[in-house]
Each structure stands twice: as structure tokens, then as C-alpha cells.
Length: 517
Image 1: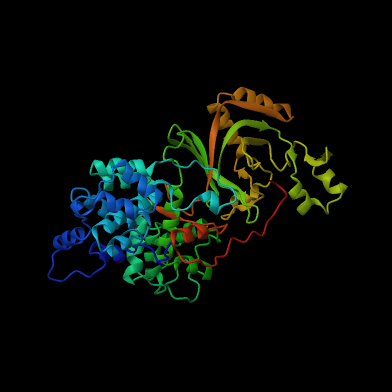
Image 2: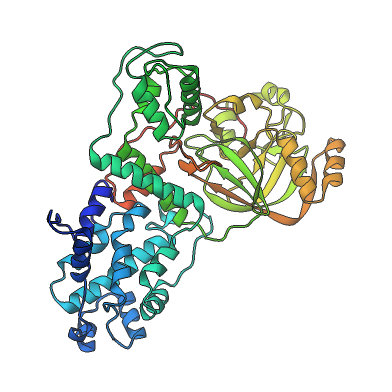
């Protein structure tokens, strides 16, 4: 796959509308578009079945034409909507040149016919389930994937003169994907315009200070959804409202939320439009990996953001902070089923944690932490200091990943919450467990189990789907785009799969570690 560097800038899209050439100043936009579209026409009577059979080399293209009895597909009636979608690939964070260059270079009708079909299948493949296979990018990835027969779909769309509409329908249609797409085009246009400026370094700016850089700071905050307007009596005054917006941004990125413009905060503000577009393209690709129909009732954890959402019947029922895996003990991207609550859980320490973190501990440490040895394993007995806290949310998966309470409550107050050994610690887990118990109609059984003081299992009648996802850009409840740090460096594998040049990125630094899962 060609690497075009920065993908699908709005300027590139404008050029592609005219097939890569600058329009003449005297040529109207409609005439330019008509000329561009005409250059893609095939003239079907110039394409024979035997010529197609001789020229086809790719199996899926062969299947497409076998379905059509080797008749050409791209007539003047249907090529327009196809070409429009190919040239509009930028709205999906893709580079249109990848799909139209071969068509532009095709010099005779049969070659152009095949190039159009190949481009349609290529774009369909990306929109339907992403460019990359996440199972090949990540050691663990078990989230639901779409299943689409793109050859059959294109065959039907071509016969109905609806190839463009069919292609667009393959991409996610939810409001969040649309918001990411619109933000991508906005940042791409800014990057292409060369108007993306950086705020100069200088002394720290605190609330009440005046500084000529304040206007630039406000503009950056607006670009990233932290301020909605810029009306100010003194344009150089670093006001309480601006400092509050900066503090909100600092919390999102895991730095001290003091509202002061120092070096770390300035670096976040100076993240350029091209970098933002790259990040948005990566996160659109992630969403193309997902099955389009998700359970209306589910628990969803955003690992990058370290937050949990509980959806019930399609509505947000609850949201709260969580603590997730630290780098090198990453929380994996997976789907699972929560099938029971465990009141007063015991914790069997995995051998990996025992080897790496408890090998040097003596019997006194085990006694102080209510730990015993059973069948060759260290087991922490129930109690308020248990690493699982007072409740565990049991899940069915091969990775021994689950949600649980914790005794280390102070970590929920931190902005950056990647401290666990892979499992997900839930803030105020007892309240969350009571909520789930009520919704699962096992509230009395759970209360009785808690009161026993012993490890007790409370089964659900219906499993509760759980999804652990990794989103470093997403839309909040108001539709504003939020950006997060890339704590595990996972964005880079996706970016390279999209055609971006590789680069080195720093992962989050975790200065706290405890023995909890």
C-alpha cells in the first residue's frame, strides 16, 4: 500500500474533484465536475466479455464479473455516484488518491472498467470493517466484527445504479462517527491551509495574568471543544473562565489540573491540526471494526479514558471513573459477559504477580495482608483490605479480566488512572453492584450475600454484555470531540495500517503500582 503521508486533506480533495489538475479560472465548478466525471466513463460497448476475462487477475473481481455474466458494470448511469464516493473517501479519514489514482492512470476502456471495480471493492472493504484486522495488530482483540459480503453487495448495487449509496451505507452511521468525520475534515482543512499556528513558549500564565498569547490559547481551546465563545473585555486577560477550561483539558490529558499554562499544558495546546486529523482518522478506523448493531443494554469501558458507561435499553444509565491496566499490564480490547456478582470475594494471586511482586515478601507480609497459601497459590481472604474490595463482577473470557471493587480508592481522584494489572477497578463499586443487582432482579440475594461476610456468588438470569474499547478521540454527550492521551501507544499500529508514516511516541508513565489485579 502506498504511504501518502498526511491523508486526505481538504485541499487534496478539492484537487481530486478535478482529477488532480487545477481548474482553469474561466471554467465554472459545474463544468469542471462534469469534465472530471466524464474522464471516468468507460463506454461499455468498448469492453468485451473476452477482454475482461483475459484481464482479470484478482479473485473477488472475477467473482463480481461472473455474477454479471462478464458484462461491464460502469455505465454513464451509475459511474457518477461511484466516483463521487471514491473522491469523497476523505470524510472517512482516508486518502482518495489511493482509490482513484489507478483509474486516472488507466488508458483504455477495459483497464478503466476493472480499475473502477477494484477501487469500489477496496473502498467497500475499508468502510465495511476497517482497513486493518485488529486481531493482527493486537495480542488480544475479541470485540464483535461486521460480516459483509462486499462482492455480492457491489453486484446488486451496480445493477441498481446505486453503488455510491451502497458504499456510504457500509460505514458506521451513528452520530459519533459522523461527529468524528466532521472534525477530521475541519482539522484536515486547517492543516492543508498552512494556517495552523503554535503558541510561543514563555513564562507560565496563571489566572488573572495578562499575556498577548491569551488570544491564541482561547482559539486552541475553542478548536478542541473546551470553550464555546470568545467574547472578552480584555483580550489579553487570562480569566477564571479560560483557566477553568484549561483545567478541564488538563484533566482529560492526565496532567495537573491547576489551570496554569506551563510547558506540559502548552505542549497539549500546540498539538497541531495535522496531528488531530491523524488521531481522528485512527479512531474512525476503530469504529469501522465494530459490529454495527450493539446490545442496547451493556457495560462499556473506554480504556484510554479510564471511564465506564452503563447503557440500559439504549439510554445512559450510569457513568463513572475506573482504574485500568498500566503499560506492560494493558487492559485488552475485548467483549465478555458479566454473569454474576461475587460478594466478599477472595483473590487468588496470579503466578505472574507473585513472581514479579511478591517473591521477596516474607510470611509477615502475607499475615498483614490476610493472605494464605492454598494449593500452591497465594490467596487473599475476604475483608475490607482485599485487593478486589467487597465485590467482584465476574466475566467470562480467556484473559481472566473482570471488573471489581478496590481498597485503593485514592487512585480514582487522579486524572491519569492506568495503574492496575489489567483488570478494571470501579469507583464506588458497591453502589454500581447494587444498581446492577436491582436491574437484574437479584437485589435481595446480593444483600444477603454481602451480609454473610463469606465469599458468595450471586448469579444473573441474563448475562450482561461488557465491551472494553480503546478510544483516544470520541464525542461527549453534547457532541463535542474530546481527545485523550494514547497510554499504551496503540494508536500508532492503527495509523501505520492507514498509511501514515511510523513515529516514536511516549507512553504514559506510571509511578504507582500495587499488587491488585
